Structures are given as structure tokens and as C-alpha cells.
Length: 136
Image 1 (cartoon, rainbow, N blue to C red):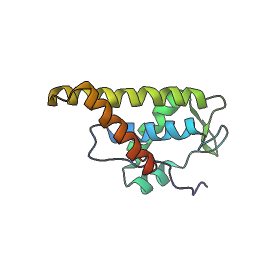
Image 2 (cartoon, one colour):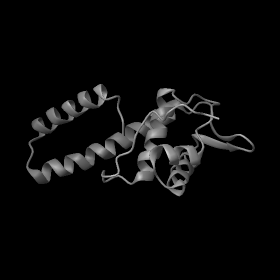
Image 3 (cartoon, one colour):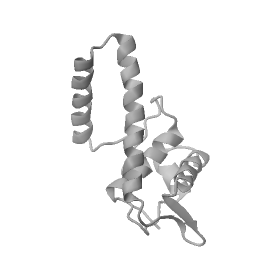
Image 4 (spheres, rainbow, N blue to C red):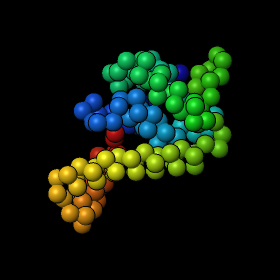
């Protein structure tokens, strides 16, 4: 059984649905190698308990990873990270970051924030996230 803490957190007040935050967090962890090929993801129950969310929410996130071909269910073992998916996970992570940045950019436009100021804010947020350990 995997007892390692998850390498991400969720933000219940974020506009991104919780299941998507979990899927993005797991995808990013796979992309960084925190869950290497052949390793088991933590169980739905353990993820749900650690994050304080409903197991159905976690199941929905893992189903998305399975649909994307990053993990596969192995009878008697659990969800296993498929070989050769690290670069695929990184690309999916880039896409997720792009979607979040797009939403932030829309908010910046509505708020009247100039493009150069938005870039400064994005850089500052990146530095702060790096210092905090890049938690979702």
C-alpha cells in the first residue's frame, strides 16, 4: 500500500472543479516522475481521505487518467502508471496550465490589467508557488 503523501493539494475555492484539480495533480506528479511507470497510484479511498473529498470525486479524476491512457487497472493491484506516459503527462500538464492561465487572462482583461502587468503577476505567482512547493 502506498503511504507517501500526495505531491499536491486541492483548492476548494478555485473555479476549477475538484475532480479536475485531482486529475491535474496526479497527471503532473506522473509527469515529474513522482509516480514512475509501473508504480501504483494511491487508492481512491486513501486519496479521498487525504484530500478530504468524496471518493466518487477521486474516482472521476482517476477515470479521466485511465481514459487518457496514463494509468491502467490491474486486477488485484490497483491503478498502475503505464510505461511511456511521462512525456504524455507533461504535455497534458502544459495544457492544464494553459487553461488556467487563459482563465486568469480573461479575468485580467475584465479587470483592466495590462498585458505587461499580467506577465509580472504571473511571474510573481510562479515564484510564490515554487517557494510553497507547487501545491494545487
